[in-house]
Length: 303
Image 1 (spheres, rainbow, N blue to C red):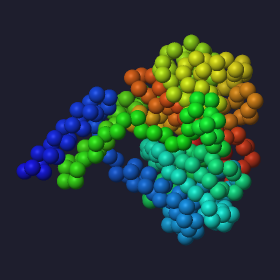
Image 2: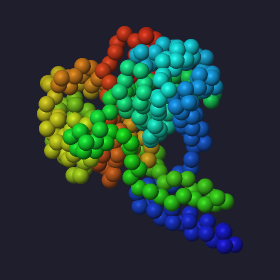
Image 3: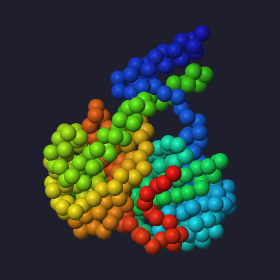
Image 4: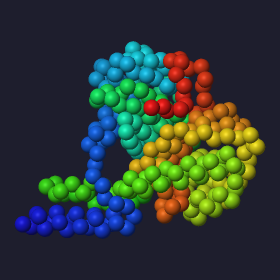
């Protein structure tokens, strides 16, 4: 009886906390399994350097959009053979929707790269990874970023108590599907206004007054973002790609042209949304390579 009372109190507490900002929803076991699959594969490949893990986690029909690696298991195994013994993968935040898993992570010891932050996007089918995209950027330490904030990791905004065993699953508090869809629309409109229309006034519409910035070259606050937008050329263009929303975060895969001093860039932007405003931002960017080893494009994510 006491255990049941404890469960009831805990579930009620979680429900009350969730109702303030988010709705409770059930965990999708398929999405959680896909996240675990991606995390386990990355750990086995980059930390354990276990070549046999490729056959365990990767499909025989694996399609590769990383510009330097070819399609298929054998190409990935050949890439792994280049790893030094000190290569390391650090798992950060994940999101999943449909058959895609998005992972924010730090890599070190990868041949040809300094310590880098990456977003990997995996397509999962029948318990195997069948397709992969990534965007990789050299990490700039927080001591050298414009805001003093780190590029990695993405910290959770609000801790919630866990549910004791034997309780009915209350899952983690999460936004309703309608709210998640609204958050994606909000981000898409903001990016269009900033980088296609170059509308500096749109910053006041979409950005919170205490905007936290993890892009290493831009400072905190809406005024810093306005100054950044004003540097864009008249021919600048933003192309919206795939999006995923989970919790209070929206991830967007996009192509940017006309950024001063940069080539055409593929960028994953990650925004935290609160009360209808964008309040925090991370991104990972990489120069678009049009002639890839596999012949597959870095952008867009299709299907």
